Structure formats: structure tokens, C-alpha cells
Length: 231
Image (cartoon, rainbow, N blue to C red):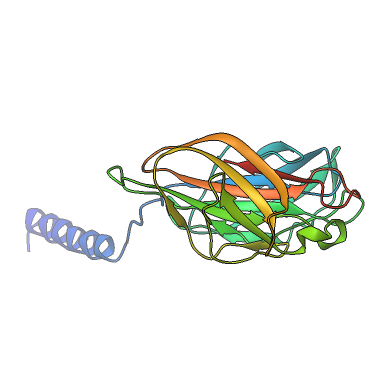
């Protein structure tokens, strides 16, 4: 075999080897980031700090909702809760979100104790041509600060029931409620009565949008001083 033929044989063998290697390598696309929002419904932390995935930092006022944070999808994400720069929530809170998913976390407890999250609430994305709005409800009050509000029901200002269930503290409606677009008043009542515990007026709901309504203790330890909010 001459030198030219030998070099050609080596080149062909190398090409075949590289081709075989390439066929065994799989390139997985990076999942589209997910979104997370934090709601501060703690007893007494005027502002909570939340560090997500060691790099994303949020500050959330009590009774308020954070902006949506983009986080990596497809792998566990850590959440650390702080108050005035001191960690008050364990770093063992981890959630894995799907690509383009959306999740809401309600922060609970006290700045004096380790603070935790309620079970995550899966947000939803609606089709652009959806003709209705959708709402979900979370009772973020605590048993320690409710009396008449131990069980609550949600109505519109015209007396229409928004959800068929009654909700104790720390419970989220299992289903979304379909609502026609428009401007509404929402009223929180003591279950089984007409006693009004809280309300929000002039709420505009748009077609193709989803909304979360939640109630929380405005001024613990005052009983049944309940705030109602929507985002």
C-alpha cells in the first residue's frame, strides 16, 4: 500500500469514528423559563426577602404580590426567605417547574419563626381568543385571627356566588371560575350568612386573562380584620 492510499484509509476511518460519536450525542434544548410570584401573607413581616435559585432576589411587602420572576425550568429551584437580611425560612424549599409554567407561592408564618410556603398554586395561561376571564381564590387568613371568618364564601356585588365551595384558612379553590369580562365588586362573606367580611370594588376583568383573588389578615391579632385583594 502506498503512502497516499494509507492516508486516505486513515482519513476515512477517522470520519467514520467521528460520525459514530456524533450519532451518540444528544443535544437537549434548554426549557423555556418559568415564572414565579410570591405573595406575602405572613403575620408580621412588613417586607419579606426571597432569594430564588441563589441569584434572584425579591422584596415583597405584606399583603402584596411580587413581580413575576423568570426562573429556570426542568430542575429543582431553591427558595430562601429572609427578614431584614436574616434567613428565617429553610433552604430546603425546592420546586421544579415545567417549561413556560407559572406558579404562585403564599408565604406564611411569622418573622419570629421559620417561615414557609403554602402548597404552590399553579397559574394558568389562556388562549388569546378566549372570550371569558377566569378567577381562582385563596383563603390566606389564619385560624388564630378569625372568628366569624373561619369559613368564607366569595360573591360578586350583585349576590352571585363565584365559587360553590366554602373555604377555611390556607385553602385554595380547586377549580378556576369562568367570569364574563366586565367590572365587578367582589365580596367576602362569613359562610352561610350575609355578613360581609371584606370587599374590593371596581375590578375590571379582561377576556383571556386569569386572576387570583385572596384574603389575608390585615392587622393581627385583631379578629376578622380581613383584607381582600386580586392580581
